[in-house]
Length: 110
Image 1 (cartoon, rainbow, N blue to C red):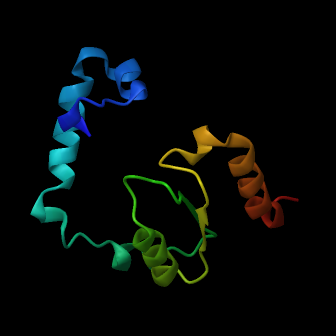
Image 2 (cartoon, helix red, strand yellow):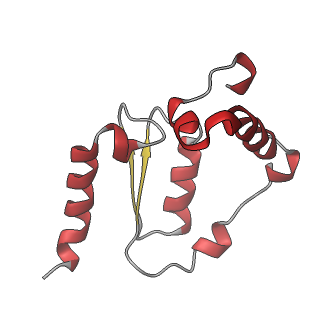
């Protein structure tokens, strides 16, 4: 993304002239081979509280396997791939996401 000069507007809004440099650094970090074997499955397996994990199907930064891994590590977790949304589903379709969160929380609210 940063190679072609396509800097997201939100990054420019928050980071100004430093947006391109920050995006380049962030991308390089996550492309390091150090992260090829990064796995927190054991750490999250101990989560006992209710958990919901949502991911947009068009998320350019996340993989469906990440959501699947959460579901395998935490069997009681509710995981959902949200069709048509990207990396910021709460900004892209706030009504849909709020409705989904309310549905998840409703059994715990009295």
